[in-house]
Image (cartoon, rainbow, N blue to C red):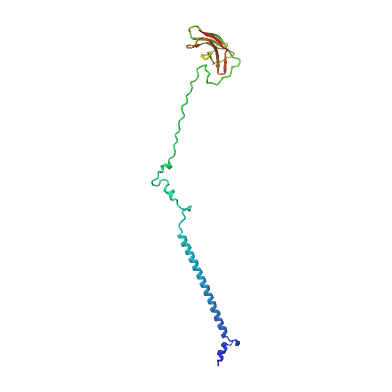
Length: 225
């Protein structure tokens, strides 16, 4: 027959403190087990994180550099840059030279002779002035034409009288300086050389030219025999 002490430990109806002690111990063991599980889980997760970080670092260090990266040096350009061995840098840096051809010297036309107005700007006619041929002759065997003319209606310090003889495509002329004769300008006597010119009837005109303008006489006819 069991003793009273053993009955008090196993009998739940008596409310003795032995059963509560077992419950506290069991709860403590459970709490310790839970804490152990949590600690193992935390340590395990930290280990996996460290391993993952180490693995990522190793993977990153093992990846070869991308040759297409903009920062990768271009070995081709470096080997062909100016100053590299075996490369003639003077062909890249030598400036191009252009040869300029000097302009050809233009021929300057000689100044026209006195009374020759060719190549000069046309002068305006002298208002109120006229040239009058007073005589025109050709002596046989002289091979020349002698012309006398006067310029009326103008007085000037300069002026030229030019007598021109024409027949078909043939022409000849001569010029003299006009002089003031007290009434107007006088051409005096003008001799037109006719050497080598054919005989026939020639038309003769006299042109007076001054700085203010020009005026021309009517044509006169003379025959060379």
